[in-house]
Amino acid sequence: MNSNAGFKASVGGSRQGRRSFMRSGLSFGMAGMAGLAGAANSEPIGARMPDAMKTLGGTDLAYGQPSPHEQAVQRLPYQTAPQTAGFAIWRSPLQHQRGIITPSGLHFSVHHNGLPDIAPERHELMIHGLVDRPLRFDLERLMRYPMVNRIHFMECAGNSAANALSPTALNQTLGDLAGEVSCSEWTGVPLSYLLNEAGLKDSAKWVVVEGADGGSHSRSLPVSALLKDGMIALYQNGERLRPSQGYPMRLFMPGWEGNVNVKWVHRLEVVDAPAYTKDESGMYTQILSDGQIERFAFHMDVKSLITHPSGMQRLPETKGFYEIAGLAWSGHGRIAKVEVSVDGGSTWAQAQLQGPVLDRAFTRFTLPWQWNGKKATLMSRATDALGCTQPLRSEWKRKYAMHSFHHYNAIQVWRVGSDGLVENSYA
Ligand SMILES: Nc1nc2c(c(=O)[nH]1)N[C@H]1C(S)=C(S)[C@@H](COP(=O)(O)O)O[C@H]1N2
Ligand SMILES: [Mo]
Image (cartoon, rainbow, N blue to C red; front, side, top):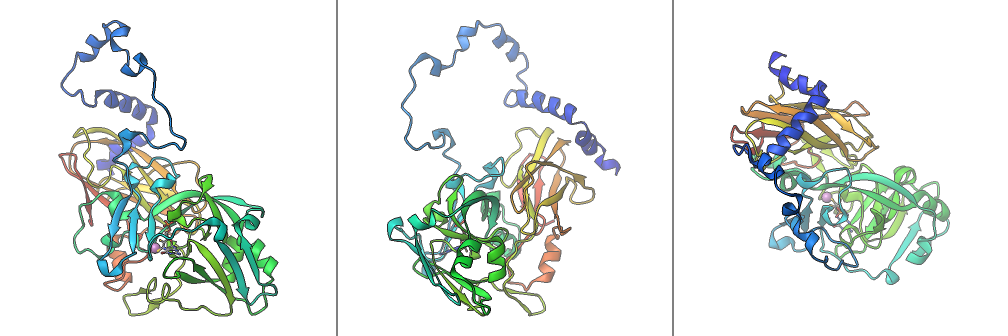
């Protein structure tokens, strides 16, 4: 308890924390240069006039872009072996994200069969199988249906595979380690409107959802869940879906593994039993440590990541005030609490949840930290509305077979060295 006293004090004294943050913020880059600030203050105001104030500004763009000074903030490409051409992963640089919405251009992406180029005027959505009236929608017709807005995360089942599989903790950035998760506002037509209009027969229990990409990516999903939560998403963060996210339309299932969110969706076949497609039998099936197979494990479990500070960052001063900040989410509902430890899990403090705290969405957490400059081990542990909490890596590994890696949600550990360098760690 005692070793945590300083940490606790800064948790309670948020005003004090803010003041010391301001002080240390002002001193960044000026360590050991005391007195300079006084000299600047005595200069006439005009001497410090920003250059940009002295000329006319440039022209703007018809479609806005990030500042050219932020070009380092990019998605992180991961190309699999040449024999799996078309399978590409673009990870989101979570270590740069503040707030809960991932900018559309930085949304992670997983393509099993390359990125199709689909002309919206030629795209159709078909609903057939065990229905009274098979239906066909072109975009113009679909866009006339009432739409809903939902802010939700989406995470690939294979996110954090390196931490699940690699025998030693890889020294990588957060985005490289765990960037197959993002959060957007999705807008589209509830699937219940379309399925009810088609008229489900009594035997209708599952729907095989197929994408219009080269490998016809398809997944079987239970009708009951699609009626409750399914959406044909047409917009992402207020604009039409990006090609990476399935333009012109995708299935969206909040809280479920990324793979079921079929992009470029063009066909829903209503059936009485799952089809066991390649995308749900060969892949996206987990082997447990006792050899049993876990199929149709749709929900993504509770998880959290400290984004600041995180892998390969260097704390600019080797002691002093820092705000620990991160993201938490759960496929089962809202985040109830996030605890943070700076001593490898010996003691935990409850982080502040920065609203909004939404159902199955990224939730921000923060905690002020007065770093004493000694080696520290940072961990975050989220608990969701169901009361589920994150396991330690060792606990997670015990549950699954050695080569399983899907649905990894163990506590992420960051080691902070006395030099301020932050590294991925397993303990
Ligand atoms: N048609 C189609 N849908 C797809 C995929 C695909 O390759 N083809 N990849 C799936 C996987 S594995 C994931 S994790 C999510 C990723 O969605 P995003 O690229 O919009 O982030 O899309 C899913 N939907
Ligand atoms: Mo995925």
